[in-house]
Length: 287
Ligand SMILES: Nc1ncnc2c1ncn2[C@@H]1O[C@H](COP(=O)(O)OP(=O)(O)OP(=O)(O)O)[C@@H](O)[C@H]1O
Ligand SMILES: [Mg+2]
Image (cartoon, rainbow, N blue to C red):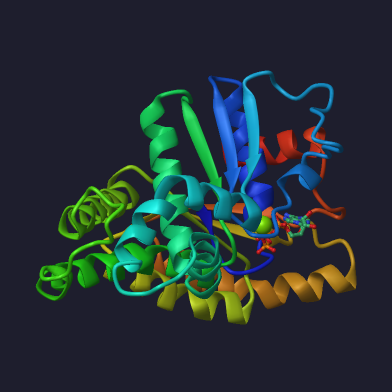
């Protein structure tokens, strides 16, 4: 999973990593950003694979629409059965409400969806490109919150009976959710390698510490830091100034996180799009 604040290069790194992994085995690169940009970076138009894209690389972008549909198919009915015990509401209205007012539930679903993809064994590697950090953290928060809610829920729900059309009792459904939420958190802790992408600038570096603290709170440790946009060739006054500005931040990151794997990516003069550029980046990411 590539995570980090907005615009630091998560999707670019995900694409380059996916291309690298695809040379060794079946690889899926999946984006859970509501406004995904993977196909743009891979220069895919009309969902057509560009020539040269490895046959064992699959690109999947899950937007809001897809999340809603998957949520509906996977959890919608079940959750509805629980809620319709309390509230008189149409199913369609209910799904609209749940996925818009409580976006965290959609994110819980995404974690579960990716866990299932891993369990399916269809891919040797799955590269996960996330939305900017705020959303990634709520993605972690939701399974934790749900677990806490479910710990108390039986006492509250135990005396309630479901509508006549339902078969499974509420408590059983709740127990299943609890198991699911625990499994999703375990999956994030055990099976997902977190790579933090950052840039050598004041705000990005300042936010790092808080992010690491938040992740630790969920029992999640970061394996690697990628420092992107590092000025490597100082052949103009502009770049000399920029490099000088970056130096203290680079030092700070290296000192503070010396126990993690840290990779620096150079600032390229052009935006990174297309297979050639991505391969070039991959060689630096995986020397
Ligand atoms: N090392 C680099 N040198 C030059 N340009 C870069 C570099 N890394 C990324 N870029 C450019 O920066 C822009 C943002 O990169 P990218 O979309 O990967 O960031 P992101 O973290 O995924 O953003 P978001 O938070 O919006 O999802 C892109 O136009 C990309 O081409
Ligand atoms: Mg992105």
